[in-house]
Amino acid sequence: MKTVAELSELLRARGQKVTTQRQHIFHALEGNTFHPSADQVYEAVRRDVETISLKTVYQTLNELVAMGELAALDVGTGTVRFDPNVELAHHHLVCSRCGEVCDVNMELPELSLPDAAAQGYRVSSVEVVFRGVCRRCQGGTRRRAGDGKELS
Image 1 (cartoon, one colour):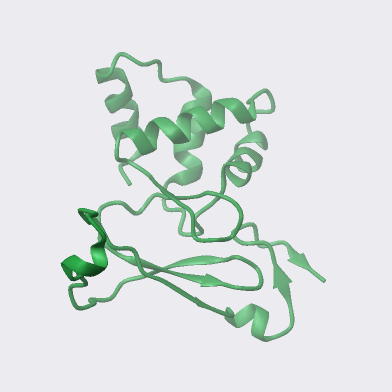
Image 2: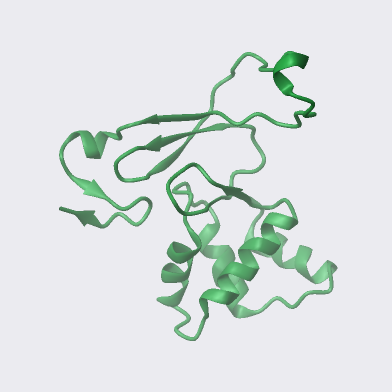
């Protein structure tokens, strides 16, 4: 993901306002490897900006997705997650207990569908999601993905 300054410049170039709230959202995403949900970004930003609304967080995240600066992931956890890692092609590993999502950086053979299996679709991308149980859940402690809070 681009830096806070680079994202701010991109928004300005598109004629959009760069508010303090948006900059805090950018900071919450910068270097974030937990693939947070909008609610998790909201909670992180709200610690510093109490007046921010969840609507502002959703709008900003969706604008970043539309700009190609963030990827929206539906990996079957029940909540859309946001991936700031858009520069490198990668796959994901999802814990089936706590919902944690991790990047998997590995080369896979090129996957393609034979014409008969494609059923008339023109396939534009392939996503691989590995499912399993994370190290923490294997040890008996569950947590909500990305927020680090332990649950019993």
